[in-house]
Image (cartoon, rainbow, N blue to C red; front, side, top):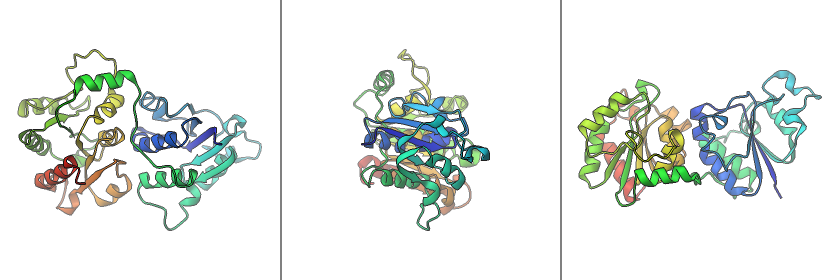
Length: 323
């Protein structure tokens, strides 16, 4: 019986942390009673910061300190990995063989290694598929990624207040870290108008640095909701935790290749992902339960080449459940 699990990584910035959430949810489902530890060997992970509240109940502890493989000297025989602790199951998610040897020291039972799997010709390109394979190997094929089932009462309460039951909500997340990855705002606005004309309710998600775009959307599509802005619910929940909770109330979402898309996927929303190029679209595909993906380079040069009509057709499929 597996009572202790260690997940070994080098660390996570926000994008890495978000794309791994369905893996974490699947891991907890496979081992509901185990103590799950997450080792960020380089000493930094968003699971100890911005996503700490999101993974509460899924990860029991985060290990940041110690000779855990980040340095070459950590591989010496007398080095005490994980403070000398051992675990019934260790899943090594990184692909460096030396570091994998460090992770192996912590396993008293099963050891699953991405570093070894990556040497095979059939190692998947997509990060989500790689994590899914590791989870399947660790569970004899029984485990699989799944949406987070949030239990945070404040997050659930806020989502219910901000998006009450009744309407068919469709999320729109126009932001991205780089301008080249953004589908033009005017296209999102046109999609929002079509959503409203179809009797659904458009819901915009804007980041804290996108106030100008949020104001344009409020002016151009006044019937659309912006639940994160001008809140009066008084519930002290915001950021990724709130977005993931709201995603659970969406019939579908549309997002660029950026963090908000992974948040919507983690919350269980069927997702239309708008990608810039095919290579990244494959590798960093969101782990949505139901996914449609459009790639701009299939239509021309730049995100603006991706037509609204194609996005609308894909979105209709998602909302209707045909995808």
